[in-house]
Amino acid sequence: MNVLGIINFEDNTASIDGLGDYRPVPAISFLGRYRIVDFILSNMTNSGINNIQVYCKEKPRNLFEHLGDGKKYNVNSKRGKLRILYGEKSFASPVYNTDIANFVLNMQYIESDPNPYVIIAPSYFVYSFDFTDAFKQHLDSKADITVLYKTTDDAKTSFLGCDTLTMNKNRRVTKIEKNRGNKKNCSISMEAYIMDKKLFIDLVNRAAEISSLFWFKDIIADILKEYKVYGYGVRGYVACVNSLSEYFRINMDLRDRDELNSLFLRDWPIYTQTNDSCPTRFTETAHATGSIIANGCLIEGEVEGSIIGRNVTIREGAIVKDSIIMTDAYIGKGAVLDHVIVDKYAIVHHVKKLEGTDDNPVYVKRRDRI
Image (cartoon, rainbow, N blue to C red; front, side):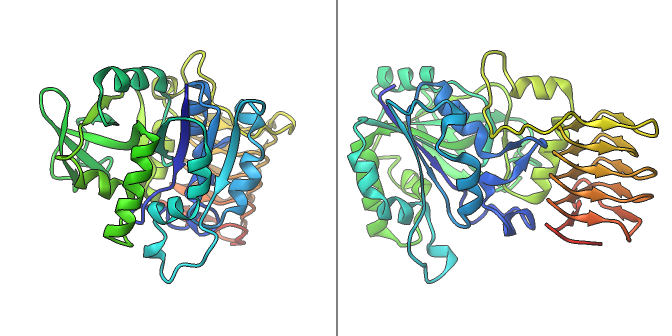
């Protein structure tokens, strides 16, 4: 496709407490093996988009290390390029660190790209999707802007804080509002937009003139009467990782094989940074059920319904239930973890029991020793 792919970052209403203190949301571990950004980046490369810009709000080091030069993501280095971009200046306040501000600061890279169209999509939505048909519909419909949306009957508990779309019978968007959990059925905006690159640049500049606090989705809401904005419905699995509780819920939901298969589609690979660690070892005292366990682990204790990252050690007598244990964490003998998120390199040894809930999981911070 003759399209520039722009992977945007989350707005200030999204906050992954704890995990977001050490890395940007796109670089947060997902399902023990992936990072959140892997899904949208794989969607773009699988759709034939070769020139991709990944925007990072803050703490770019982890994202640089994970993405590298893009070869792991099947980016065609001869025809395309992967750029990681961020605002190379300090902001007076975090509220000024908007996507519009970052687009303006990196406008030279947008303007110099030879592709006449852009697809802008955020990294904190998780789904598998071929943009080809949506791009074709955008051209055929002669829409100014096409926005992807997901219809849900679970809006009271999921997608809270996301935008909702009101559309007429022709799927033209007439109103954009916040999902406050007041309605069960909603069309959730996935904040993924297809448009002419010149229009994108014009809207960025217009938003910057209106308000220093404007985000790109704010200018979209402002121009609904002026431009033809049409919706494109996305089927299949869609989730939005915009809070710690949602991060926990989404990972736990994907333990179900049917849910997992609706995200990981046949002939649609999700690329990530690979790791050559050895297979996981299960000793005679180990017992594991209903879990996703990555390579390189040593399991001596019990694991039930949990997500276990690479190179995790779970000692004999330990019980890990309905929890997320990230790379290189250590769970000592006799420790009992229930609804817990343990960040990378943390050691749980002296405290023998940690127990959270679905809505409020216990978080053990990175490199902590408890």
